[in-house]
Image 1 (cartoon, helix red, strand yellow):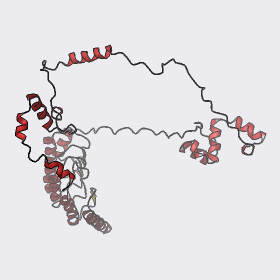
Image 2: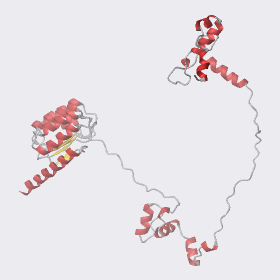
Image 3: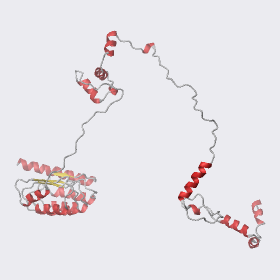
Image 4: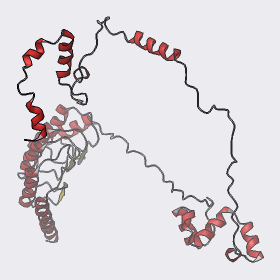
Length: 345
């Protein structure tokens, strides 16, 4: 038997109940506090449960934040500041650093002829810039300065030379003007089957009511003169896609359809693709850049449509899967070859 076990043997026959009966109320309270299981480092517990309550005073009332802040501020003002170990006098010690002048060794000194020294001393910034370009010191100038000095036989640069490469200034490109198309007038002309109306362009008009777009697609069913129909960035959704699909099933004159940059889901695209199979005059279809990715099933349907519709020679969509991309590329090559052979005949 080890010494530790022998030490424990003397506690084997101790009567715990007898010991507890002999304790005073203060000792029992202290024992109760010691036996409480607390975890001060557990951040998942509230602050009041991380340690036992040791407060003996009765609560004085609800928290008064303004009174507490005033009390803390008053206490801070009454506390005397600690004196600095080394008082600040404002005296400056030491000498300011002066960079020593570097003397150029005799073997590194370059001496030019008096005529060259005089020419360089009287040279303008534009002439110095051309000289730097000729010597290959392209880091001292912008690309425009460098190539102007190299390619031109005359000094045409007046920007000067500097030790920092300056970026070229490009003219800002203005935004495209808003689409001036009058939708109500276009709708009337489509309904009346106007011979002079061959293109309907509603691109970037984002406040077109859905019922008006549906009416326009319905009027396109019987129109025989419109060749191009574009609804790019018109915030169109599945209801407009279904209306376009119904239009494609009946229209026999439309050649180009563009519905890119809209909010059409996979269901709407699937409806349009199924309607394209029943249309033999459409040669161009663009459906890219929708709000969400249509999915693998829609991309496979696109490849199948291109294989079964030899009339489509231009298709606008960026495939994400290798299989449908390869099938679509092969189908487009075949369709364009068939179109080329038809033109030769």
